[in-house]
Length: 321
Ligand code: MTE
Image 1 (cartoon, rainbow, N blue to C red):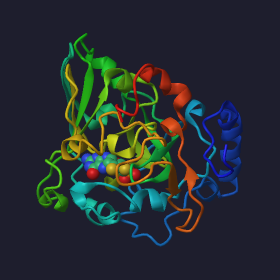
Image 2 (image 1 turned 135 degrees about the vertical axis):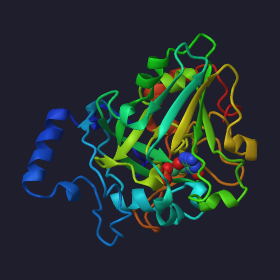
Image 3 (image 1 turned 180 degrees about the vertical axis):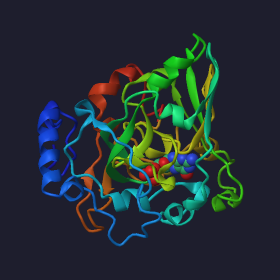
Image 4 (image 1 turned 30 degrees about the vertical axis):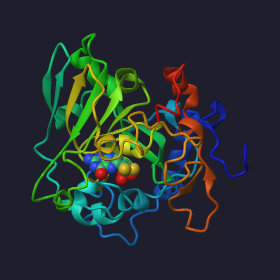
């Protein structure tokens, strides 16, 4: 493996919980928790918009989904974003997302399910134990982050509504709040922003419903009050501020596929061997490492191949990009 490659997730890379907990305890004792856990702290940030400055979201570390890579600072995670509803600039979401209304908020699950239902976000927060999982996020624009997300597997929620045998795909529909989202005036996307997964991808334990980050409620710019995280796929698959989940029989036409089907596919599995028509996907820039830091090699399935590659056995991943 090249020297600066991000290693795949090997058993040795996953910090045993006991070690992790004792380290956290020691750090807390030393008053260094935020710093040594990789957080950049909130220095230099407008505190009202700082990552989850509002409310804590206690989460239990899940050692099964834990990377020992240096975590991206809280400041970068919450101020370098893609959330086109608030503008196309990387700092637009940080600048403008404070207007997003995140309460009251409901999530409707409908379509091919035996028990369609509308959930209140505060009930979803109590549906299962909130875990902390450290995932890589690889954006299709060839930058990446390492982020401690807080939430639980999407499958926990989907099981509650009992998908029928016709439920082959899952579609995520995200919020549209005219007046609160200045980016809606740009007609780049046929709003709402939608995304989708095949049912086995949606039920995979790695696919996460995310309510928080860094042990606090999601900042609006990161997709409050609920988003998904699918770490082996390009970041655009992870819809933010979800209001509806629809289980369907046919593959949904997702926002980016609608815009440029020759550039963005439904699967969007991270694949260093399949370049985007306008740039290479072979390497990535780690946000926070500085612009001149050496790029790191991108890994197939973003390093999660051991867990997910079997779902694509027999598929031509050059065609199904
Ligand atoms: N969800 C919505 N609703 N709107 C968006 O523009 N951008 C996607 C994804 N989810 C987007 C979205 C893209 S391109 C990426 S890389 C990730 O969100 C970025 O998530 P982050 O800003 O929390 O890192």
